[in-house]
Length: 492
Ligand code: C2O
Ligand code: CU
Image (cartoon, rainbow, N blue to C red; front, side, top):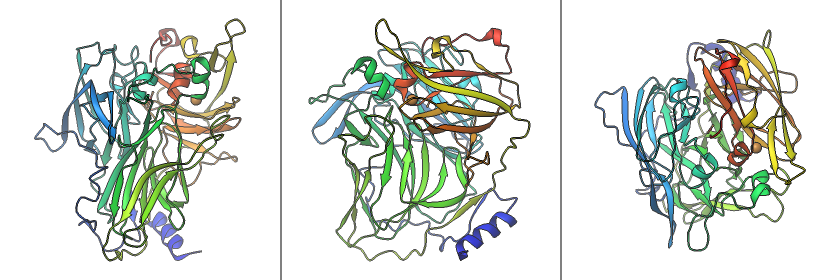
């Protein structure tokens, strides 16, 4: 057993009352060791907090069409929040009240869904279950408390495949003020893509018809915080924290920082994981997040490349494809930073017990209509528009068995609640991690353990390949409400 692992186990044993501890943090470094302007090409703009109360974050969000520059000389008339892709980063602290004055100046109705945030149903942004769609020119005030620290995001829930694909998404970071990793530099990295023609005009969201839906349409331009191939200038060896969001509507990313580099994963969808763990590659399905520490290291003037390598998400996903360069990291002409090893983190997470959990079986299928040959994704034999909901009582713990019979993977997202993923022995996967979106690989089964708390409502779940959701892979949990009150969704 390594010293680090021993430390970790000791920390887990003795730090029962702490939410987390950094066990091997180097001398606390709250001053950035990076050169000035190191992250200028990547840094997200942040929403301006208009409220003087330190525990209230009050911001405005205007959805509108705007011209954005995604690469030198490439301007796109995109759908944006406040005129940028991604929209402004919203930053709050755990327990804060967040008020968002939202106005829809798009050419279509829309809403905002707060992906991963455990908000009341009225704030969940799903038309029909949470609120009516916000009509063109109308406003809506979102107002909720953020109960969990972590890396979240927001996006519309009306015609979501089209609207997210056109540029509507932003990051939402909830900080834990008790947390001090001793890493001064943090980047919030929103990965996405956008589909344009050679003149930068948005392509139709229906390209490829029914078959395009079956695969899930990926944009031809891969964006990192709204730009193709931005550059970061880094001091060799200096640790950085990257909070990464996969906001693409269909694309998976399998990140690689090159030989000699690891991603120290400290958190996922729902905040810090049970303990940090090193990964050579980081796979993020659509909708998933990762919180990692990295220390890019090379000689002065050399360039490292953050790439997305080929990940097999099913038929057609790796053939005739290329590795994507995402971010060029140029090493600054400065002496290397002597930081020592990257910090390790732990967090106490108490898993639910599978004992007494209600079993719920879900089967994901793809059907073809023999008459017009069109395809439809289904959950338990039904597309979203005729679905029967999963029934749950307040406080229920459920064990979901999700069987994917199709030839494509599906990142399944549950609104409003976190779950734990179980391994083949029905034990929670270690390190424990609160998830709201999990990859169900093609022709594989995954088991999840979820507890529904005291927030009654109709909470949807769907594939976060948003074309698949639109193609039928969507259903709902009817929590604390009678089955007779359920009506399937027409738009989402
Ligand atoms: Cu991020 Cu219903 O989705
Ligand atoms: Cu899917």
